[in-house]
Length: 521
Image (cartoon, rainbow, N blue to C red; front, side, top):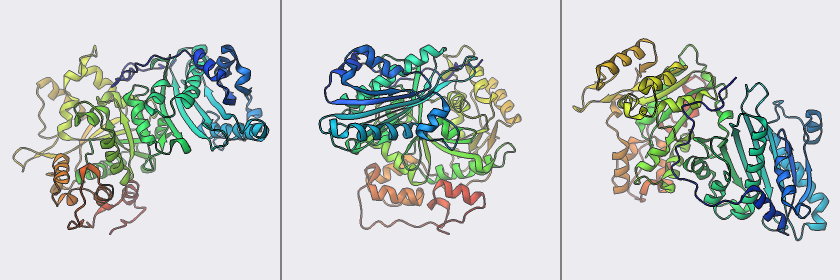
């Protein structure tokens, strides 16, 4: 029997509480049924027809529901929507096929009769609930394709959920509620993205269901940046982590991490500097040489925590500052994760839910002090030992990037790293002896004096020279998009560097794997 929600990562650290007063699912369904402008179809696979059921129970469904169906049998489902190459059914590609098919049928069969006065919608979900033996966790894909005005191109709201109720009936009910919330949000909160996101969890709790991916698209959402939606999922406690790729596309974490060797670099990236890039490069080099790591299987992640995002703005998140940092990371090809996992043991617990392969964490040597700081583990009965049992009992290794001591000459490494108590020193030596912590051996000593705060200050003050402290792509994007308060100066010219710093992360890893040559060499 599996644990549906492990004890360490479990309750989202809500930065902002969801406080609006929500209508019940039946009340929402009734409002939609009484709206003479909406009309649509429901197609649900795997958890019954729980969403459509709310609209029938609310009364007035004949004004809203064109069709409901559940192609539960795999042969029927494939006959209607086509088979998936992966052979799986609870995948985004299946959901999109369902939406395409059902929305097209609405237009074909009812376009002339109703299309000039009604806004069509198609709701679809493909879900797997907890099995009888309770060895698998429920999850599902849900989507709405909808018009806000008749005879216009449709929009889409897509979400992926993970379910934590311990029985099938409760998970089915949760799917019904979130489906109603999605349809209601499409028509009532389309012009208020904050409310759209918050309302998805109306009458649900993080103990029951988690929304780890959401995106909107279409003509009425051209102004919406889905990376901000990912941030808001974490900020409002709908999930503890959200991910998007270098192109800004939000991703399902399970798809990103499944069977992957994950290498994580946490930072503020305000902005990303040559030190950050060297940490990733050198960390990748050592991680890829581990016996139980396959180079072609490594997923490199740049992680931003909510705490770090809000630290520079008095505890509040500046969305433009967030997007500036993300633009920088995307410019060098990073997959970005936003999380509530300030403690590393919670980060490892989360990643271990999605992969059993080895996990690597790259961090500056002085950041190890926070790992050993016992104030972060006061909520755990076993204190630091309990956290370390989660952090290091799994297949995890930390790679420590050296730093200069206060004299500006002496290097701080594992050999001379000092901890506040003798007992922690013994614990540290144990981790070293068991190959859980390792120094990054090859590094660029000439850049150790670069600090992101200094670079940021130089950018804001219009001083030259900061370009040499950041990767070429980062300097270019900062200037092109005027990020971090940069003001164009015609006299400034970036200095090209004949190094890997002009490449994107995937090109750097290919170079280290011997599969590509530096583009600027």
